[in-house]
Image (cartoon, rainbow, N blue to C red; front, side, top):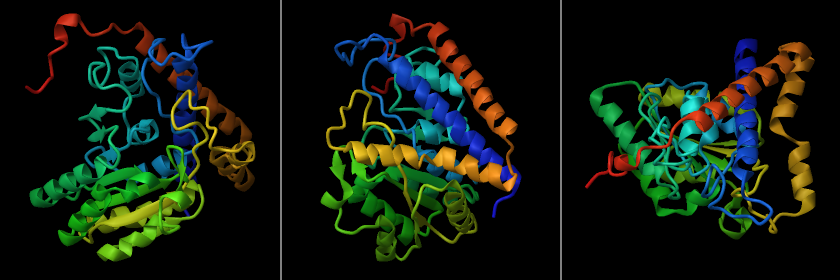
Length: 327
């Protein structure tokens, strides 16, 4: 069992992620109503938020260093923040501002941060071969850093999934593959797209451990990730972890979610992982009610400051349009 300090840190990390994602719901909707206009408001374009999936990010990234490489999906904010990305620069990038990670040119699906060795992409499963490349580089350099690839259950049916696991196993690379199984690949339920119930079983096909975290529990994620990360660091090779998690919001903001029933959504909200976890912490004495409330208040202050920084930051100068572009 993790120490109380670790438990409190997991809770704090999940809360700040949740507050950030909830703030982005509000910010994103500005100017887009009454008739939804995806191009309107301070944050145009698509927006994919990870409320409900916080345990996966917090539990895994608690074991990582800034020098470890992390790749994520088009739903990346929770992983980016858990791995230490500066929240203000993240918010500025989402707003398309020059102070953002990519000077406002990448947007929320294409974040890149050299300080935390983080990258993500809107292409399904793209981060998996990238993580394998990071891991190969670390091994050749003789470093004990590792790579972690976060991906969704839909990505497990892509060729890049199998190619990446095969090469990682063949070359015994220090990489951990983390499948966030929220039961939906956009609007396609897992049982309509995947031949087996658990993608973790696919690890056996490549001779690597496949570990299933059957519920959205940050402690269970932390323990599974701890073993996989330690194995990778000591040269034991790759691992595959599958986490059954919950996507509380739509695939994208503005998604009417006609494919999900009201009963399903009610069940998801009732078993909210953050509230369940903090209830356990209060019950065991690892966290008191005043401490719990303080965590939420501090997270709101941090998020408000990041959003305000993004709002006040200037847009990139028009003459910089071709800067940082590979010809």
